[in-house]
Amino acid sequence: MKAKQSLQTSCGKCSVTYLEHVFAGLKLPILLLDEAKRLEQFNKYAQRVLLLEQEAHLGRDATELFPWLAGRLDLGSNNHVDYRCLVATAEGDRHTAVRIAALSVEGRKGFVITLHDITELVQVEEKLTFMSRHDALTGLYNRGYWEQKVDEIETAKITPVGLLLCDVDGLKLVNDTLGHDAGDKMLVTLASVLRDVCRTGDIVARIGGDEFAILLPHVERAKLVNIRHAAEQRIETHNTNNRALPISVSIGIAFRRDPNEPMTVLFKRADDRMYREKLNRSHSVRNSLVQALTLTLKARDLCTEGHNERVQETAVRLGDSLGMPGSQVYDLRLLAQFHDIGKVGIPDSILLKPGPLTAAERLEMQRHTVVGQRIALAVPDLAPIANLILNHHEWWNGAGYPLGLKGEKIPLACRILSVVDAYDAMTSDRPYRQAMSSEAALAELRRCAGSQFDPDIVPVFVQLIKQNQNLLP
Image 1 (cartoon, one colour):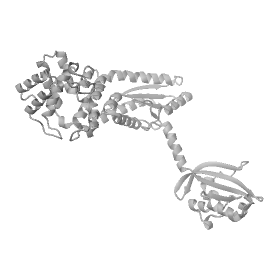
Image 2 (tube, rainbow, N blue to C red):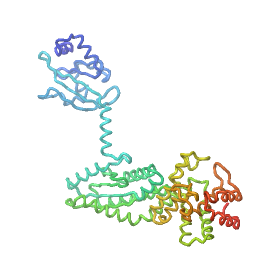
Image 3 (cartoon, one colour):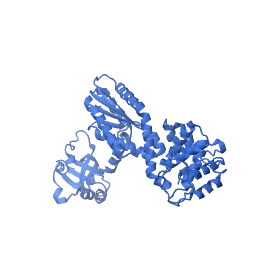
Image 4 (cartoon, rainbow, N blue to C red):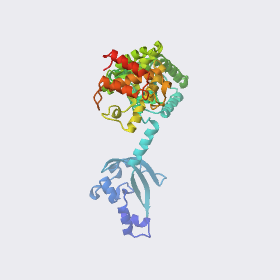
């Protein structure tokens, strides 16, 4: 059939010229085939998109020209069919929505084919599908998809099945001190480890904030144990190379061979084993994290190298001179060692700034007492000094922070540390100033006695320094 005849018959009230312009001007590819499935006509948009030429392509078998038509032109009782496929175009393979419609004009039959590029739509659909199944942070499967796979294994009674559960130890402490970016980095690293040690087809998922799970269908017990050991070795290697922020993970595994054993029972066995391991290692893990945080602080704050050691020794001597009981002296030593631990949560741009801080930066710096208290509360060995860490920047006149405590409401250990810490800071070099002399620093302490410092402690400290010139710089 001729294109003019088909177009004129499809709308008798319109001129052939008008319909030809519509056919030619539509911005989607249109193909006309005859009853023998040969290409009879195409519009200019199809010519450009599909790289067609009149002499080379008209009259040829359409299924040879366009493989995506193969098996699609037998419409049966339907007058049209819609489907999606990849179509080779001038811009490469594109996702395309194809409609094939039967065409009957004055007893002659054929087909009209329209193509709609839906590549961007498909990409959005694929992204949404991925997001519905995967955890946004780690890229692993999420809990919803993991539970779906658990149900499928339950229904199909697949055996043997292995399950590995793991939980990141101390994540909240890291989030509270170094910030969520550091905690997220730990989660992403662990996700990479678990993904690498598993087999193709295993379901690796993040099923909670700090919880991960691996579902291993058709696995033998020995292989399950090997995967656990491989994960532990990878984590150990990572920690060797990243001592400032080690990853600690509690792991529990369980194995099912009986197809009638509920998956909930398998999960409980693995969870119980993981929890027991977590209890056994919790104390050492927290202490290790504090040690790592301390190392991180020392590495960042190089200008205060040796500061804690000097302050410890002097604070203890001052405490003894004031008649402090032995148990309080022990807490004072810990306070002197860990009073600045909260600075690990302060950005380098503020902590290492070579000059005076702005008002906003001072507020941010003052957060280190609160962060330090959180760290101490998370570690049994430091819990007794948590409030001392919180209050070690209070002033005698109530102008300190964070609570504005005044006078003897400030713990004695904090009042002692305040004097010793200030003296050491004044007599040490800083990026924005040179160290003061001992005489000038002592004069400043006397001037601030009764305002910043306990007026009864300052004279004792001054005498201690004069008697031990080598005690502090």
